[in-house]
Length: 388
Image (cartoon, rainbow, N blue to C red; front, side, top):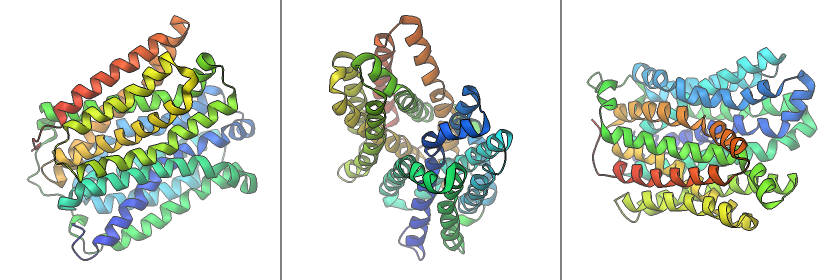
């Protein structure tokens, strides 16, 4: 439903509120992870699942989320996902480790629906689709930063269980706004039966290029998110507090980075220059960490801009290359299946390379190569071709 139609502002508010929820529940775990492990006696592997499970859901449940959107409509599906997200965040703190892991899986499933279907909703804003996409990716990054920043203070007052459950209140607000937005909205019903089959997407070079952008961006983001503090400790001799500060700077500047994409798109129609710009933003901090790690504040800032612009670019490509909302949902499902499926293994591969080579030179050279690959995939995905 375009923003010019009645209720368009309410729909935009629903989209932005949903985006705020799509990473916060993951980012909230890190600040209280030590408390969770001490209380529940979790092993390191089980603790790692608290952040890995949602990312695996992003990949494995993406096709099912796209199918759900086709069956009931993207608006109704996202509304249901916000209800599930609110309930899952309350559920996961009510018991021991099995309940926590089961609730975390449901959290990941709920967020996957929003990840996949928001591009289809954004497509309905017509000429404003690119701007709306940039705004909601900024909200997505802001939600992750807020989740990381406010969970520890909340836990000091409410305990880790209360702090994690409180994150669900924002999902309740999003669900209430969605309930108003989908009432009578054109996108609340099932998608048209004439939509192309998923198989046609898997034979499209442009669809594969869009998926490759998502995969390379995700790999770079998750790898630096996981290893930046350790990398700085090894190469720059920083302590734990400094590493935590660098990680926070990296996340916070992602908000500004995500706003770069709609600003550029508002001035020029083509995306080839944007593709090269995003790849360059990623290459600068990786090269900096390789040759001048002591200047880590600059690399953390530029890396933050890169990750914010990268995710905004990846999602915007889905919206711009899809011929309509139904295709946008399918293309989003494909790109996230490929993108998050590949990205989830990035930290594992880089960690193994670091251990095998006894340092970070080879892993950083690999990340530089991924930046070049991102430029190549971005140029193909930026071609003005609609996927039908």
